[in-house]
Length: 354
Image 1 (cartoon, rainbow, N blue to C red):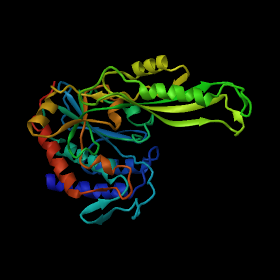
Image 2 (tube, rainbow, N blue to C red):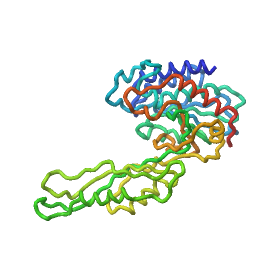
Image 3 (cartoon, one colour):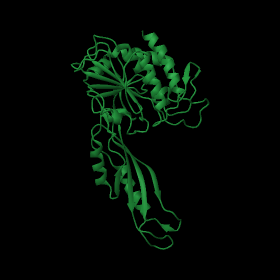
Image 4 (cartoon, one colour):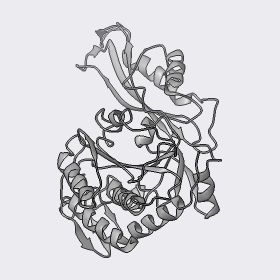
């Protein structure tokens, strides 16, 4: 059955590559996923561009495992040698936008769901969810769906990790800072230069070290990434704005980090969002223990996924390589998908969770 599901997965992946699904505009890709599930007789639920379904013999008394990945892509970057929206096979690869991130994990998890779909002896329930707006952290993807799903006890998020297990991932804060000075003529010793004040504030960020360091994710990392001030060469600017990119670990909530930054800095601090927290799982979880028993590497991921929106234990795992994501000539090896399906099946077979 796995061979049949693998063949279908490759065909489905090619259809998805050929269907532009930029984040926020995934409606056509959603139709493809829905038609594919319906062709197997699976009943589906939909909400905007999100699609989800449950295993045939659902039992309210059993724990629930969510299999999730996303159908949206980023915009193609410059430098493509091929049409990013045309699945191209060359040198043993399938080349195309979204082939690796997250087409391969998506079709692999869908195949795994179908593998277990009509099993009556499962010790758990399964939900498969193909979601939108992951790449843009939009409000109509997992952020919307998480309130619609049945009880979930554990989630596997499909992202390209080379089928290694990400047991934690860093959260994200983007913070807009505004420094106020006083305008004056540059030729005279007038005004209070907001750029100089901003440099002092940025140096505070640059030199600050958070006390709590994660064993899997390391330190909280703060980086000044943008700065803007002035409108004319001979005017001392009275306002300077800069942006801080903050990657949080599981030792701090985003609210805690915002509070600390507010106390560190003397300028105006305004976070764009608070909801993309660090996420992870207890290393004693049965799924993690089974992964370790099979000799699979576990690590902490620096990149963000829909895990950040999930209020239950979750891991990130999938075929492909994160280093290929968002690059020109993005690709996947078909054999990575087959091995991914087989490994997912092995890990879920006989898994007991509470």
